[in-house]
Length: 108
Ligand SMILES: [Zn+2]
Image (tube, rainbow, N blue to C red; front, top):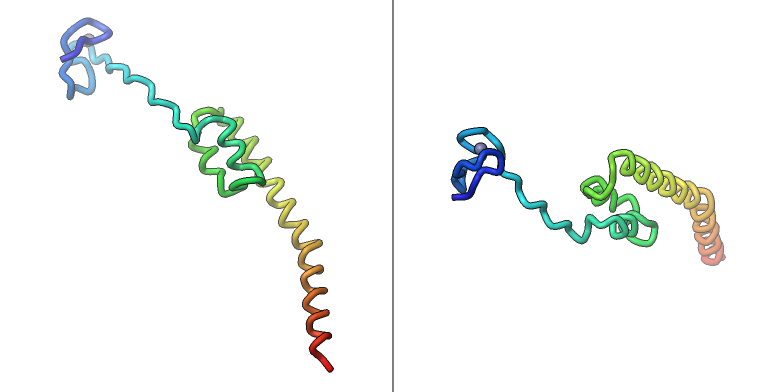
């Protein structure tokens, strides 16, 4: 048995709310998980680590406001698309060039 914070009436351990005044007992704040810390999340979504695959970490973290989550999501999508564009523009032709050279080398 514990006491209601609102009216002082005894509240059972299994009661969701005080039977007299319906005040819900305040739960102790859940310990912040290490992967919800801001710098962990920001490192997680950085190009050095998970990148866009780390976004669920950002969305679940209580350390960011909805606006902050939106901004960081857009930033992450932005550089991801930038990398994809860079890859398509520069790496694919380079690989094609290499393959052409290999092909040429084997044609006698
Ligand atoms: Zn009460």
